[in-house]
Image 1 (cartoon, rainbow, N blue to C red):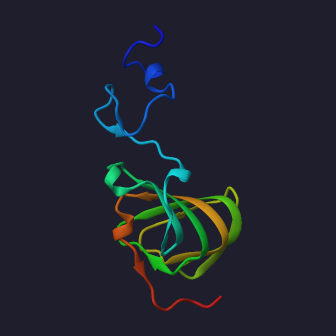
Image 2 (image 1 turned 60 degrees about the horizontal axis):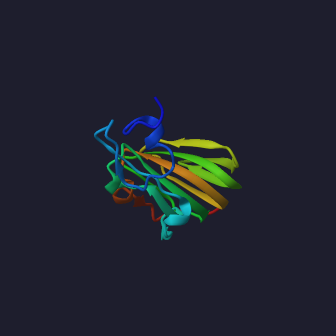
Image 3 (image 1 turned 45 degrees about the vertical axis):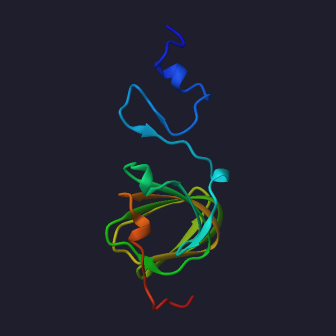
Length: 143
């Protein structure tokens, strides 16, 4: 049975706009492209929220352009960084690691961190609400 109203093929044929309430699922799905989101400066760099707190998803997903992030931590939020492009470094408490394309870094809540270089990264924040859970640390370690 192809193309019946409400079936998976007709829902995912690319003709839908977001948000769209799927009849098979009581939640709403969201589709956003990086180009559709206006960036702004945040602690980590230029941020484009692709999934944000108001979307009511289990996590937030941010596209970040990082050159020199401020040292900070989160009390309630874990972060997973996936480097899309570029290279740089990341400080995690007292450790320093290399970042480059296709590297993934898990940053648990409470870990002081910052990145620098010329990076584009996808950051997954669990649970949602990270933008109200940013705690900058005044005393940055010189590099």
